[in-house]
Amino acid sequence: VYVFISEMSYVFGHALAQSLSKHLTPVQIIYFGGLQVAVMNFFILRNQGQSTYAKTPKINKLLLFRGFFGFTGSVCVNTGIALMPLSESIVLQMTIPVFTGLLAFCFLGEKYDRTLIMTTIFSFIGVILISKPEVLFGAGSDAEAAAYPYRGLGVILTLIGSFITGVIQIT
Image (cartoon, rainbow, N blue to C red):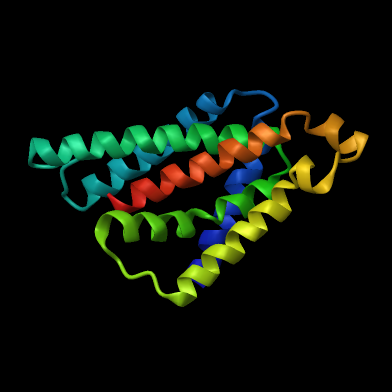
């Protein structure tokens, strides 16, 4: 039940971001979303008697590092949402676990067995089918090109944002 609610919140948030992208820049959308999360976290931490800062400067520096990457990834993803159909953007963002697994294998020494290799291959085949590169699929319809003239850039930015999110998840 919690996973379903979480996924529905994720989709709703991205649908809201796409509708707001007609009036606000991706950075403004991230700012207001971050402000909402910061206020909620402040009251939750205060209610539980927790400090808003870590006790050691090293942890605070690592949190700033994660925050910078989180902001960069969010800018990429929200820009991608504005430049392409929402359904395609969300599907491309589902590559986050693939990037996280690959990065964990490379930097943390995690196991990467046959099942994960096959999952990675199928995931990237899905990316190719969703992104529909002109080299393989030819030019799309004129209506599609007119509705999303920078769709290719949206695909690239969404994948960069997914990769950055994978970096965040292994730190």
